[in-house]
Image (cartoon, rainbow, N blue to C red):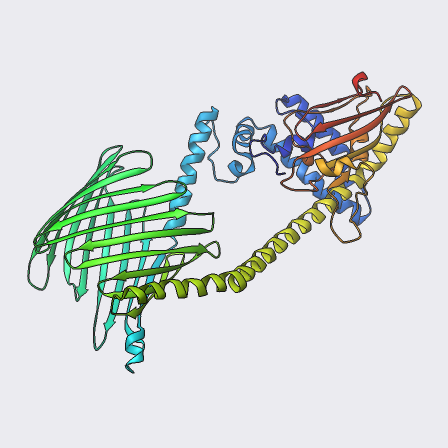
Length: 541
């Protein structure tokens, strides 16, 4: 069971001073003075105690500085510490929460643009065509190869460039090309691009696009070949058909004149697209459908038919890491029977089509599909899946170890904070015992499950796994006021209270308290963000 995503904000500064999120400036000052009396470094002579005091005193001073500044407090209440460290220009011009939110969003967008501006975005592909029949004939397995690469960079807020190139070899013939593109954002709704390429396809061109409405876009382009001077004019229109689908129409006039109509749809579990293209003396249609079976695997069906193409493709892929996907596809068409292996990582792709046969023999086609598929399933079941499960388990173990290290560090900090609270807490406890007042005899904070066993040891268990609870009896005795009452405020996560820590990050937590008052015994359990006020008659055992 995980901590609910809609939990209130983790208002650690309020928890640190043990004040309500609605506390007045005077209440904040009063809480600050109370904690400063305990944690001021000048009160201690021993170097170790002085270091502990200094560390916690700095935390208290930071909380006081932020919460007593009206503008900083507004920013903290909306966005937490992230808002205060994001570069907001504090001043009288930001008086309302809406203004602060708008300014922070502006700065976030600006930082994203700056981040993009200093990082080039490379992409590329390698295509290795293999031929089994050619290999069996003794001519080598490599039929051809192609490489393409491009680097994009945002050079300013409104300008971007892209530089690319490609090389291709097929048998004894080959060639290459280089390209350059410059894009300028003229306004929020329009842009213009200038492009040039040299090599096998030497052209220059310009394209402009504009958002006609919130749901439609139009683009117009003009290119000229530097080899024969031919000119190609293109126009395209894109329209959003629904929340998940859009359609487009393209008209091209020139050596490759054609009309194309396309459609794309993308939903949470599937994506599909199709296009029909009619040209001068040619016709073509393509379609594909991809279905997500889980967050890591998908299946794909695609087809292509036309004047010089007839092809059917089926296969699937699996996400093997955060940035990598492996895909295996089976293709049958007029060019023969192929198996295609693909590896996608970030913006890079490795594609290896393997020609199995040039002939479309039905029996051979069925065997070429089922035999490798069966081998793949066996490989996946007995080698790949165990390997990836082992790898995922290793990652989970590393993440768990990292979390345990963080918990150990937080526990150590809480124990140090409690050391300086001990003398004052014991004096308060003694005074309350003498007058029959409020004395916390046991208080533990942690996960729901761990609190069911209230006698569980709060130290590390014998197997080295940290307990899911922490003893907070001493901090609560310190927080008992002169009137013999204790109050923890609603909407404030209790792990931020001085002397507390989060023993199980991400898990829902509770606080269990046993206490005595007037010679009677009481107990109460409250949720992490729930208010606690004791003593109360309803808590009597």
